[in-house]
Amino acid sequence: MSEVIYGINGSVISVRHASSLAMREMVLVGEKKLLGEVIRMDAEQTMIQVYESTTGLRPGETVEGTGRPLTALLGPGILGSIYDGIQRPLNTLARAQGAFMGEGQAAAALDEAKKWQVTMKIQNGDTVQGGQIFAVCPETSQIEHRSMVPPLLAGTVSQVVPDGSYTVSDVLAVLTDRNGQNHPLRLAQTWPVRNPRPVQAREPISMPLVTGQRVIDTMFPIAKGGSSALPGGFGAGKTMLQHQIAKWCDADIILYVGCGERGNEMTQALEEFQDLTDPRTGRPLLERTVLIANTSNMPVAAREASIYTGVTIAEYYRDMGYHVALMADSTSRWAEALREISGRLEEMPAEEGYPAYLPSRIAQFYERAGYVDTLSGQKGSVTLIGAVSPQGGDFSEPVTSNTKRFVRCFWALDKSLAYARHYPAMNWTDSYSEYLDDLSRWYGEHVAHDFLDLRQEMQQILHEEASLMEVVKLIGSDVLPEDQKLTLEIARVIRVGFLQQNAFHKEDTSVPLEKQYKMLKTIDYLNSACRRLLKQHIPVSLMTKTGIFEQIISIKYDVPNSNLALLDTYPAKIDAALATIR
Ligand code: ADP
Ligand code: MG
Image (tube, rainbow, N blue to C red; front, side, top):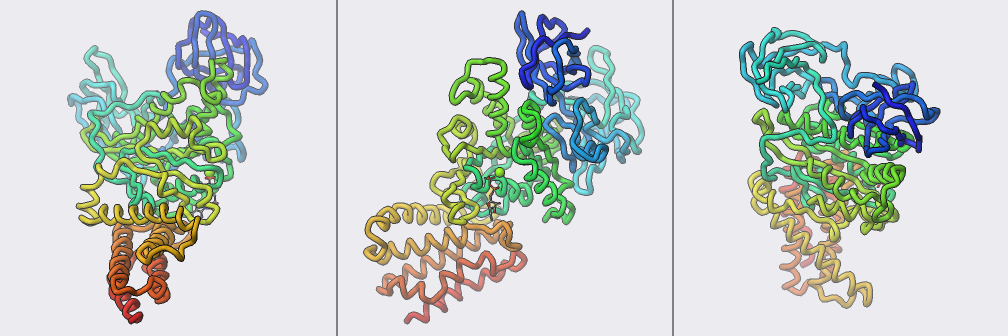
């Protein structure tokens, strides 16, 4: 049975008395069978958001229900793919047409012809549970794809195929549930994107997501399974930092959701990722990456869906026992899509025209981060990092302030730092990480027992600098006592030599924790050595004249990541330089 379009308002269409449709059902709209979703139903009217351009659509055309909600298709072949917000592959469609995707195109999200080398993990007669791994195949040279019994199914299996090569739609076994109903098990399965995939239990946070970026790993770390907001005005460096994290972080799998940003940025990301090799495996980075692109010229409703598609794919790989990191750039564009659709539904607007449910939608998204025991009895995690682009860098606006409520890490990018070419332009007084306590044990065991103490000390020096600068602004630095002058000099070493990190420099673009620690240790050694000289009434100006401060600042370039032992020679260098004063 089909319904008839009554009204069209941009991406939202209405149908009257649509008795055959259900809330959140996916529908096919018009002659072109555009994909849509039922987003509101009352006695009179049913409202549908359409994921494709509604240009040319007319009242009177039909709307057909599909009987299922908006789902993602999950199976081998996702890695390395580029999808739009509703998981249509952009690469294969572009290849087929040599241009932009047409409307109503239903290219399969997974390659149906490709054969995978499958090893079965079940036998005839086995009782299986939801989430249990029933088959594996090498998806890429690094990632084993672990096909799981759909989470809500359980029963006894029969007709198990022998190991061999199969496509995503071949039936590999049949599961008979308690009611005697049969369900085919295939490599591909679906999941409704708006529902979190179930897990056995949530585990406490205990491990950092190591990014190779000093201001993150040392100063404001994010945990595996944690969430972080990355707010900043236009040009503050959000996209750049998200790319850096995507390239260098130690997650097994990366989901990069380009949401409403400029199309050329996504193309650029794609090209960069294609050229790069994964530092840990030497394989192309794209093999562990999934890109979801919904650029500013694509329909607004698909942008609204894109982060759910992304997080669903992330959860699917988490459930196999992998650590997944998802970057969304930018969640502000997603919130604007929400606002536009809400406006077309004529809902009562709340703050700045956003719907009243904006905070709950943001919360629901970030709640899908976590470190979990999976249904298959493994450990996996989803880490969520959302860029926020407030107009004019005003962090009190609704999207930034509500995101802040639901994440535990806040990386505030600062336009004035970016303007001064201090990159990453992360403000060290406004940013914070609430994961430090959860991670202190890991850092103690895996980096050094005094790592966080040193971090604390550097933070302290930066805070002292901030308050001293208030004085300096008024009366200049000449009047400061010598020990405070030294604080300013050491703070400069921390800012320029440690916090600033050059994404375009071969050695500096990503830095292992061991180097981060030894850099801190060296700065601390310099600080203590200078403080001793202060006691002998040697002025700070003589200490800086030795050039040792500049040498410490350029450690990041001078000490290659492959020869960290070189860092052990620095205490002697500091001693020698300072000894020339006497
Ligand atoms: P946003 O996404 O916040 O608008 P971008 O990430 O596009 O900002 O950054 C704008 C520009 O700032 C980049 O093109 C680059 O030139 C510079 N930039 C940002 N971060 C860095 C960095 N870590 N190292 C060097 N340059 C950077
Ligand atoms: Mg950007």
